Image (tube, rainbow, N blue to C red; front, side, top):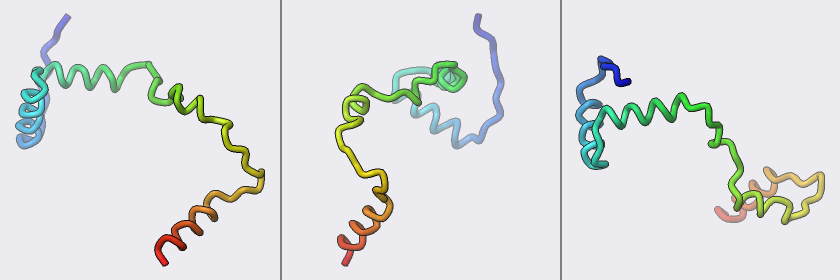
Length: 81
């Protein structure tokens, strides 16, 4: 069931949002509804690891005392000498 909602927003933002919605061939109401749906969704897929990343994990064996920050600092130091 659809319900009317009144929002008070900055006029410039409303105009930009209308232009964006028009460019995407959708209504501003649908755009906001989709945003709110995604925002309030229980789906935590944003934190899931993609299959590509899963396939890459464990490829490199590094020593336990490996200092990646020092290695990166050394890399940048040499790069910008």
